[in-house]
Length: 550
View (cartoon, helix red, strand yellow):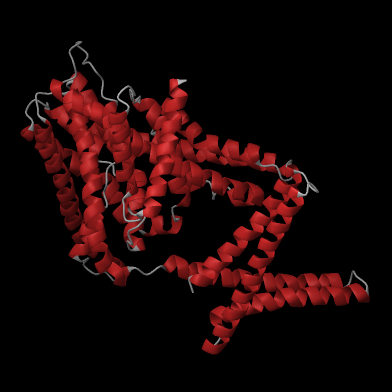
């Protein structure tokens, strides 16, 4: 009963945070959720939060990373592979070395291998936290793609480094060669497992869909299992479960998801994954807030005061940002050299662009889950040195990272307005026009076929229907590619048409409610008809949004 109540509290706080940010849109959602978690922890001191790191990683990370990688633009990933890889692998080792030695120097009670473990836990940036933090911030697409790509890949390199640092602490043995080989094996193995199992899943989905008509709940439930399955399989085989989940997201479309599934499944799935994404994101940060009071109580065992821990956490956070900045500057000459060799244009990025990339490396759930997985005891039975202090410092750095980014990023990004060109919107518009032209050609082709199959009376009726369809399509084409006067006239015509359709839908809804009140239809019939009307309403809303973006 207590567990069920705790879950309901988490869901309520997630909803409450969403309501508050609608009222005050400038509030960073992750920070608000952390604050709400802290408030509940103080108001309800009997709530005991026990974060099992393995369970935490399994329940939250695979579905979120799978969803992020699924919707990540694959073309841009290939386009920005070089900066993404240098940030997700090279910067991780650079961070582990720099922060590890700094922490050992700042806090001598933390042995060097344990300091490296802390640095490794903090080295992965968090795709989930990044997306939550930048919802209200307009960052140029190129920078955003690089940051998201880095966050999707550096989890593996960071966690492998973490495991090796912990092993060195437990055994006193460390080999750079074995560390590098382990990283390559674990990473490639995880990606292979994710890709292979995704192809198998899509094959099964295709067979289920072939025997389905409109009911696609089973298919969506199966798809929900995919990230968990690939994660567990990869971990069982000794590979990276995180990279397996990322690989599954990257592979799913290539495996034939669009060709082997029904439109009803994709529509249902879109809303299912949207709700899941918002819910899991919110719960992660609320749990962090709930865990904060407990972590403060652990200070008594560390020998350090709260103010000292805050100062150390701030120093580590600033160092992480400075190391990112330094790494970017170190890699720029190589970028210039490669561009010169490939005879492509290259410009030295401005300080504001570099600052945006540096501040965009926020830390989140991965760091917390990693540090909580530290063993309690060494092989000789003695306590793991400074374990509580390491946990407190990581929590402090995560909070500082979120706080600094949420304050400074909105101050920097307005000056990057010139770079905020949305090529995705342009190509979406061009793609829709191309689809419209293809649809018009398909109608003409079908008309030729029907002309040979139907009577003269039916042929005339068919031409009337086709003319109406073609007229709507032509209006859309003109609204995008006509002269200024033609465009304005066409947009007005389409706007009036949509207004009338909205009015028609509203009239249908009112009549449906009247029929239900008069008991001429039952609630089952009403729900079936509402489902159809809602689909039309969504289609009209999407068309309306497209018109607003012109």
